[in-house]
Image (cartoon, rainbow, N blue to C red):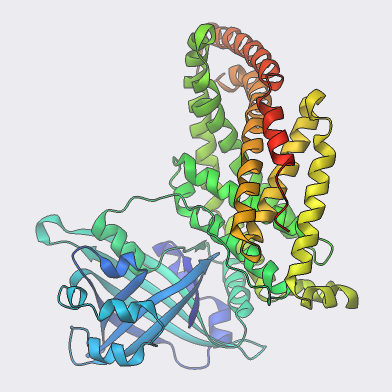
Length: 523
């Protein structure tokens, strides 16, 4: 299993990296400089790519090496993948040699045995890279290969050739603890601007060859085992949340994708909920907690304006429709500004340090240093009792808050919504530990309740933003236009308040609450 951390840097910053004192101090051998030419092969319909595999043949210093990578995960820039490698006589892969090397239980082995795949393999894209290699040894004795790659990825024939530049750092763990990768990365980051790299060269090449658009990444289901310890489950849950966060980094950085911002924010909220679930056993350092708050704020601003412009105002009809249309244009303009700010946040060194710090904390199990003996025993215990107790606790909290839902104030409804969201996240985290026939209806009715409460919360957020909107447009509109926006905003705020009051008492919310109460807790 290959474990590496990928970081991106601007080409003009490469000399700063080469001159970094850490590389000189920790290097155990002479620096190597290699010229590499990679040929990635696949079927015309990209069967290997569709099965999350990549097959390349690389020429290095006059000889050829084939490499197959498949499976694995990416968490906060940390790539973990299965890898099989061997010499070949020329630029064509040797599938028989690969078949002998791949384990029988690996799905990619069966794929490469299919005649339709074997006979259709062809070059899809190439890379030409100058690679600089440092072999590092940390003070703790961990061995890390630090690689600086600079070059280009190319695809297509001469008439339709496309290319993207490559300038990235890879830190590969050769021996030791994965946490050391983050120590090295954070040390480099203090002097060199770096960003987390979520995509491998193969993924970037496929995106170039097939013109794949960026897509928002939703949370992936967790596969937990009752034999796992509480600590192992926490690491799995937190890693799953960070995978969703980092998976949407490129979409947010592009500056316009509404769904990427939403999913990255959901990933952060899931992470914060997970930290709350385990707070009696472990605690995130205050500095990292503050950075999560900062990132959540940057994404939250963009998301709130997106919901106002694309959902709340878009749903209005009748006498409010004309006013809503006038406000939507201004709200969309604010949303675009907030997307730019969110993009700046996730491409900043601050974001990189935050994600690296979180991953280092997870990999090193850093919370154990501050744990009591009792907490350590609970962390090492099997997870099932903890999961059942957590779901019962969340259920009790939600039931208590929901008692006054019929006559609740907006703040009380908001508290019910938050409790419902935390209960749903916890249930989804632990879902694989319980029978699916019990989990599915419980989560479904929780989601229905959240939807009803969510609209009422959107109205509260809309009221706040509509008060800000005329002043926010001060630099883009004259006084008469601002006055017009104020009139439109005042009308729509009143309309929304009246509609929320009517919908809050029309029975749908209470029906959703009654249906949830009648649903059995999976645990």
